[in-house]
Amino acid sequence: MGVLKRTQVLLLGALVASATSHAAEWELSLDLRAVSSDGRESFLDNGQGKLRFDEDHQGIQLGRLRAALDQPLGEVFSAHVEASTWDDDDKNPIDLTEAYLEYRPYPRAGFKSRVRLGAFYPPMSLESRALGWETPYTITPSAISSWIGEEIRTVGLEGQVDWLGTRLGHSFDLQLTAALFGWNDPAGTMLAAHGFALHDRQTTLFGRVGAPQPDLDKPKKELFHEIDDRAGYYVGAQARYLDRAVLNVLHYDNRADPTAEAPEIRDLAWLTKFDAVALRLESGNGWTAILQALDGITIIDPGFWLDWEFDSQSLLVSRRMGAHMLTARYDEFNVLFRGDPLMSGSEDGNAWALAYSYDSGDRWRFALEWLRVESDVPARVEELGEPAFAIESKLELSVRYSLSGSF
Amino acid sequence: MPPSFLKSRNRRLRAVGIAWLALCCSALAQAGTLTVTVKQRNAKPLVGAVITLEAPGLAPVAPISAIMDQVNLAFVPDVLVIPVHSRVQFPNSDAVSHQVYSFSPARQFQLPLYRGKPYPPVVFDKPGVLTLGCNIHDNMLAYIVVTGAPYFGRTGADGQWTSPDLPPGKYSLRVWHPLLNESQELERAVQGGSDSERIELKLLRDLRPAPLKGQPHSWAY
Image 1 (cartoon, each protein chain N blue to C red):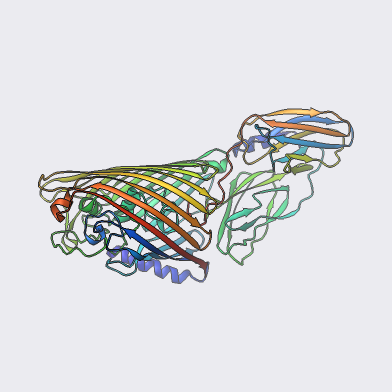
Image 2 (cartoon, rainbow over the protein chains, first blue to last red; image 1 turned 180 degrees about the vertical axis):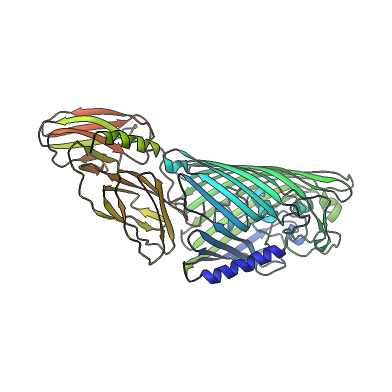
C-alpha cells in the first residue's frame, strides 16, 4: 500500500496548493437506517450470512456517513476523494473508498477522453450511478455490485475515449476503456470465504471486510494489496443509444500469480478473471430496466490447485414518478468450487428486493427496502454446524440527508 | 448570400449530422405574411422548430447580444437562434464550475466558467448549428443556431410561425429542430392567397426521443 499512500499524500498536497485558484466542491451525507432483520451472522462478522445487518444488528444503524471532495487542479485536472465511516468493526473508523486524479481535456472533433490515476471503481455497474458509487434504485445493490464494492477496486491508471456521436447528429455514442492496475491481488478471497452477499458496505482502501478474523489460518480480509508485482488489466466498451439505452461490457483479469503468498495479510494472490455485461434501458415516462451478468473464475495454488467459478445475473425494473420511485429486482448467484473434496466453497442462491424511495431532489432521501435472500451454502454445515439452506430477509428504512457546496 | 451558400451549408450541416430541410422557391407576389405550420408525423404541432427564410440579395438581420446561461446544471435556453455576427455572453448562475465547449465546424471554442468570473462574449461569424456541451457535466446539451437569414423565428405551441411582411420574391424556407432525424424529408402544402401565404409541413418520420428530464442531480451519470 506504500505507493497508494504516497499517491494520497501527493493528492492532498496538490489540493492545498491549488485551493486558491478554482472552487472545490464538497458533499457530505448522513444515511441512517432502521433495520428489522432475521439474517444469519453476517459475513462482516465472519459468519455465513448474506446481509450487512443480521439478527444481532437491528434497530437504528448508521448506513453511511460520507464526505467527498472534488478539487479542480487547473483547468483539465482534478482530484476526487471519497471518505466514509460505517460504524462497524472495520480497521479504521474513517477511510477512503476512492481517491484519484483525473485528466479530462476538452472534447475535440467529436472525441472525448479521460484518464484517471489512483483508486476507483472500474466502469461496469449501470445501477451504481449515484454519488459515492451508490445505487439510487434500492438501498442494497445487486449481488454483482455488492461483490464489486466488496472486493474490486482499480488502483492504477485508466484511460477512456468516447466518440460523441450524439453531439454530431447521430443517435449513439461509443466508449472504450482500458486500465492497468495493481494492489487487487486478494480479490476473490471473500467470494471463496462466503460467496456472494447483498450489501451496500463498500470495502475501504486501507480497511478490511468487517470485523477482524480471529482464526489465524484465515486471511485478514484486506483486499487492496500488491502481492506478486504483476499488473492486472481490464478492457471495456460501452455503446449508448441517445440517453435511452446503455450497453456495457468489461473483461477483467488481475493476472495474479496464484502461487504468490502474502503472510502479512495471511493471504495469497488470487488469480481472478471475469466478464461483465450490463444493459440499461430507460423510457421517457420513468421506466428503467437494468440487466446485469457476471461470469468469472478465481484461482489459488498453494501447492495444490483450487478454483472457484462464479456467476451472477440480475434484472431490475424501476418506475420513477417525479420524486417517487418503485423498484423490483431479482438476483441469482452461484459459486462452484472445484478442488479438494474435503473443502466446500460452492453456493447457490437468489434474492428479491422491493424498494420505494422518495428523493426531494436536494437534501433528503427516504428509502424503504424489503430484501429476501435464499441461499444454499454447504460451508454452513461444516464451519458453523448450521443448516446449509437459509432464507434471510430484512426490512430497512433509510433516511439520508445530504449537503453540498463549494469553497 | 450567394447561391453556393445553401449548398455549402447543407454540406456542413450534414457533416454535423443535423437535418435542415430546404424548401425551394415559395414565391410571393406582393408584400405579405407567410405562416408556416410544422406538424409531426403524428399530426401534433412541432414546437420550437427554427424556421429561416432566405433570399438572394437580402441582408441578414443585424447582430444582437444574447445570453446562454447555466442554471441548475442545464443550459438556458436549450436552443438559441441568433443572426450571424451576434455576440453571446456565457454567464454561470450555478455555484459549481462549468466548462462549455463546442466542436461544431461553425465555431469551435471552450470556456471555463467559474463562479464570479465573467468571460468575454463569444462572437459567431459563421452561419451553422453549434452543439454545446459541458466538459464536467456530460448531460448538459444545448444548441446555438447562427443564421444569415433575413427572416427567422421559432414555431410556437401551435407549431406555427408567421413572418413579418415579406417583400415579393423567392425564398428558400428551412426547418431545423434538435430532434429531427438526419435526412428527414417533409411533405409540403402551400396554400394560396396573395397577401397571406400559408405553408404546412409534415414530418415523414418520427422525432428522435427527447432527452430524459428530471433525473436527480445526485445521479452522477
